[in-house]
Amino acid sequence: MKFCFSLARVLKIKGIWEEQAKLKLAAAVITREQEEKLFAEKVTVRNQAFFRLNEAGLKRGQTIAQQYMLANWAKQDCQQQAVRVKEAHRNFSRAQQDFLQRRADRQVLTKLEQKKWAEYIQEKERKDRVQLDEVASLAYLKRQGGA
Image 1 (cartoon, helix red, strand yellow):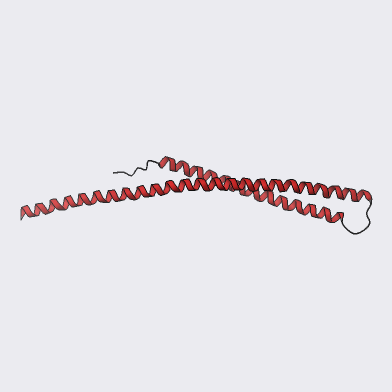
Image 2 (cartoon, rainbow, N blue to C red):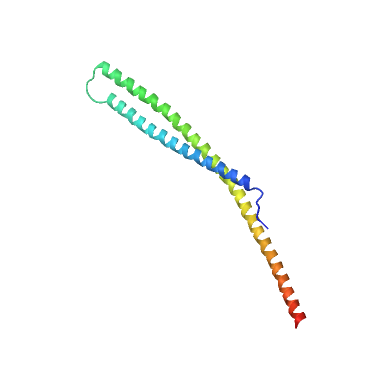
């Protein structure tokens, strides 16, 4: 008697899908962290540009105009980066949900496989007991007949 789980191939495929989802999740985490870091850097540049614009002292009109343009560009760049950060968060959330769903699917099949394995072991032990009982009965009958 050999253990054969009929859904073994399905379980193996679910495991592969789970690993793929885990890799996508890791990539989404890295992307999200990179976008957040870039966003923090751009906010720093924006703040520095506004600080230079608002510095005390007399400045020429051209310098003020340049600083204003830099500050305005930094502001727009920060807004665009904030959108990219939100998109990275959405991608991360999707990848996380996909991973969790695939892990749940695999876990269901794994539990089913464990249950079938336990049933197989019980059936094997029952058959072994039946065989041992038969051997013991034959040995008893031989002793009774030979005595």
